[in-house]
Length: 193
Image 1 (cartoon, rainbow, N blue to C red):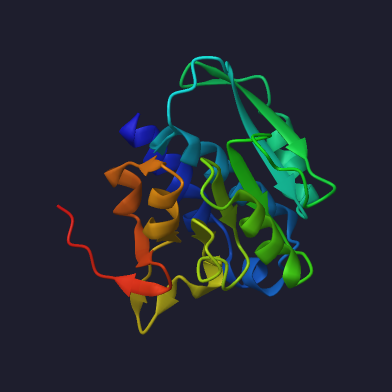
Image 2: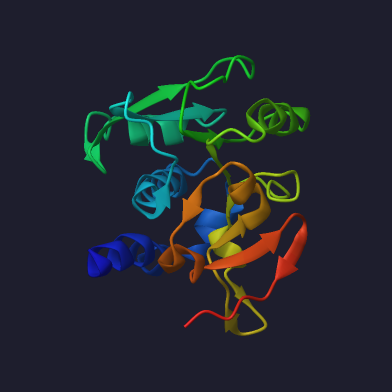
């Protein structure tokens, strides 16, 4: 499982030309990679127990290409639950409709409204939009073009631990080691073995 996780998360970034990914946010290849990351994140996130539910639902808002890439994974079993993927058309009415919310490119106010709607609920919020973690989003996928800075390899994700804890979710250490950690809007330097 460890090797598979590493291959799925790292191999696409290694084999892809960086310039073509960073120049176009709607790049279909980039969208497919985000869908794979999102799918694999499910293995490393624990939700509060809900014995009444036998599904794990992913809602996609404002990212039709991510939705199309993930749709084919619907029906697979993750952690004993059937994966259900659907596209949201309205930012309202998110009460217990999903366990994961991916927010794509939208109007600037929409991520705020969506995050306000799910605040404190056990819904993992994920985006690739700059500033998402500062707004209270839990996971931000960094642009592949930004992964090398000052000659040093950068981490691929930003995880807002205060938002994760507030929602009673747990992210496993294996994923945290691959991420920059923020608490609220402030970066935290966690030393992990």
